[in-house]
View (cartoon, rainbow, N blue to C red):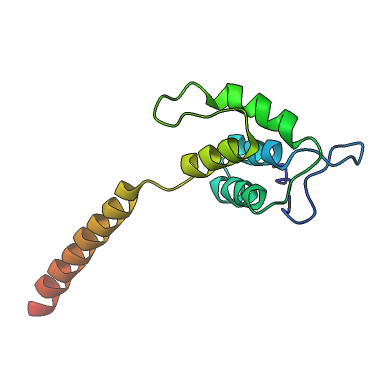
Length: 120
C-alpha cells in the first residue's frame, strides 16, 4: 500500500523539482484522493492568505473543473474557488442524523437483550 503524501498549509505543497506550486491544486489533489479534511484545511489556508506563486493559474484551472454545478457557481478567482472547495468538503448534516438514529437503535437492542437475558 502506498503512503499518502502529506502536505502542510504553512510550508506549501511542492513539485518534484522543488518549486512551490498552488495550494488550491494541492487541495484538489487531496479532494480527489478522498481526504476531505485536508482539502478543506488547505482551502481555508488559501482564504487565510497562504498562497503560492501559481495560485491564480491553479484557480483558473479548478474553476473550469468546478464550474458544472449550478447550485455553487464559481468564477476564476482564488477566493471563489477556495469557498466552493470548502462547501464541497463539508459533511452532510443528514449523516449526523443517521449516526444518532443508528446509535439509538443499537442502544435499544442492547437494552432489550439485557432485559431479556437478565430477567430469566
